[in-house]
Length: 233
Ligand SMILES: Nc1ncnc2c1ncn2[C@@H]1O[C@H](COP(=O)(O)OP(=O)(O)O)[C@@H](O)[C@H]1O
Ligand SMILES: [Mg+2]
Image 1 (cartoon, rainbow, N blue to C red):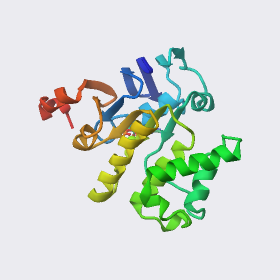
Image 2 (spheres, helix red, strand yellow):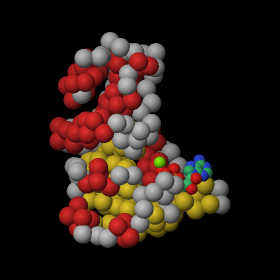
Image 3 (cartoon, rainbow, N blue to C red):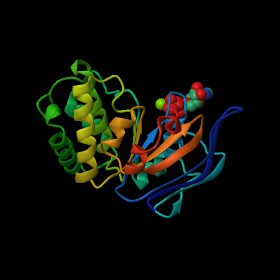
């Protein structure tokens, strides 16, 4: 397995937010993590990246125990997180945003190549590459934010609610670009979504989180037959 979580638990102070979380993702799989607001989805992504400590359980990536590694070493493994909200540097151009995001790569030729690779994935951005982040639409900012994460060459890409606040047209474009990231970059993707139908369009497997517990897991075809009561939000 590419990523496994076994009995992971996380608290904020005395409040337990994740209970006994066990998951398994295969290489190149797209997995959706769905659940209501406050269920613990963002916390789970942060725990996988190491931004928040797991007080119990184990996280393994490509067979190595990474449970207690700091985030920068997990990024070194290829675990990359694209936070909710599509934040970009407003005063930098599209290309500058990508270059800044790619600063871990020391070879400037490789940085330029990566910028080209990312722009070819997002034709809408390519046309706007000299514009500043602050003038982009919400959908374009979300694509740029995904592109900035891609500059870190993820093997496992943790994407937090990429469709949040976008118009339906942009939701489709963003999901199409995530599908292409998975195809062209051979990236395993853990996608957080509140809208199950959006997620089902591109994922192979679904986990449902409710109040910090995984209450359902199944492959895409099974989910379609599960009652909405069981999906629980
Ligand atoms: N930094 C924090 N400090 C304390 N509680 C938090 C913090 N971040 C999130 N929480 C709480 O943890 C729970 C899960 O939050 P979160 O992971 O953001 O849920 P989701 O992403 O599913 O909406 C919520 O009850 C939220 O209020
Ligand atoms: Mg969240």
